[in-house]
Image (cartoon, rainbow, N blue to C red; front, side, top):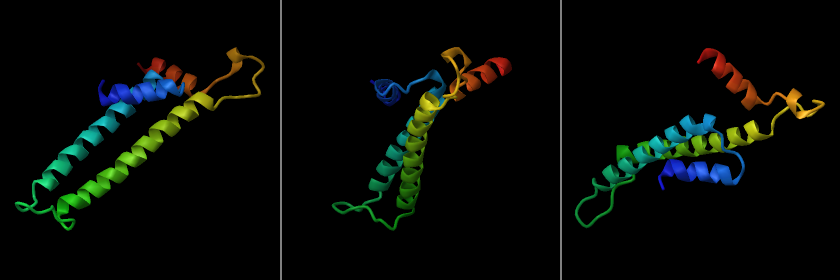
Length: 112
């Protein structure tokens, strides 16, 4: 199971998955792969038998990318919850309710 599939299954398990979230999940996985590459490159700077320096420029990039990944994860799950729960609760029946997800889909169909 790929990382993207894991995130999708987590969102599905919470009842929050929708195909519109697929690009955000893909972008998050790209960031995580880049973080893995940076960590390996930083570790490779260690002297034989020693540890990599926290003062190395790559470590600063690792910290920034970590923060970006945390923000992306948070935004993904928050967006999924918003798409799931926000709607006009005053609507008389379900057909009158216009959720943000329905509006996004309608807009996408008009342009695509």
